[in-house]
Amino acid sequence: MTTESNSLRGVVPMKARRAKIWADFATYLALSVFSLAILLPILWVVRTSLAPDVMAYEIPPRLVFRPTLQNYIELFKVSHFEVHLRNSLAIALLSTALATPIAALGGYGFARYGSGGRALQFAVLGTQMLPGIVLILPIFAIYTRLRMVNTLQGITLAYLAFNLPVLLWLLMGFFQGIPVDLEEAAVIDGCTPIQAFFNVIFPISAPGIMSAAVLSFILCWNEFLFALILTGSKTGTIPVAIAAMQTQRGVLIGKLAAATTIGIVPMIIIALSLQKYLVRGLSFGAIK
Image (cartoon, rainbow, N blue to C red; front, side, top):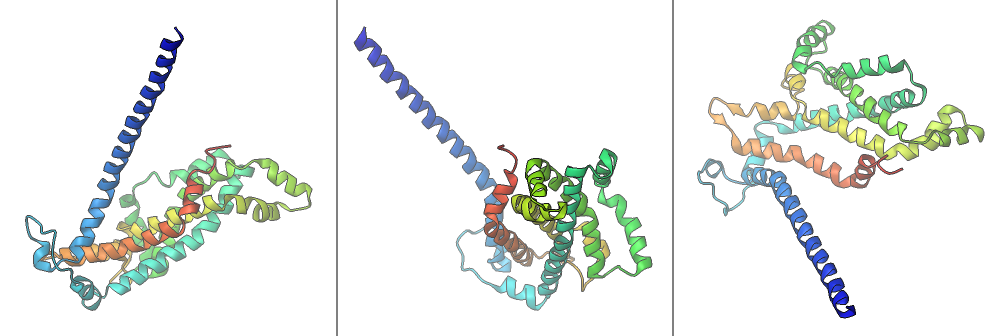
């Protein structure tokens, strides 16, 4: 009996190890497939940006060729893409710099003091329920009267107004996950509520605030409809410049791919630079 029981004990762990190996293999295989589904289109855009114009239209496409920077050179020399790149950076950075502190203070007020009650909180969220196509004509009429069409200040304020409610609700959830005891202890030690926020709560919630800032930057960077209507040739952003590459001659696929590649680079830099903050921010409050 002892020998049989020992042999059975040896078989069970072996089966468990095999099951774990197959489960891990299936998990990594699924992750690899999803990763390729995300990366392959990006890699194909980069490949197209480095291909000559004639080769970019070939079917079936050629995988091995001599790369060229001609598309990038024409993009800046002919299309003056640096203007759109500079506009996108200025608008996204300024709108994010304004929206993040306002959303942090507003979200803190909602989370800790219930400012305005649930009615105001849902009213702020309700501003996001209307599609942009409904709001663009009234906003264009107002901007025309104020002479803010075709200005960087006008599109920056528009992005600030549309991104602020999203950031308010996002940061309100972060602040609700922070124990109130920390602020009470700081007040007992002699801090004012403002000092408690900046000295105690702000360092703890920095990952969440950083995540909100990155989200604001991405929303501004990728927005197309309002940039198309409210900007002009000298104030247009990258999405508008990319859309303009569909001409009477067809789609300028090489230049379009080069512009798209340049538009992706800032997102990659932000992701790599702020990766640890983003991970902490996205997982904030998951474990208490």
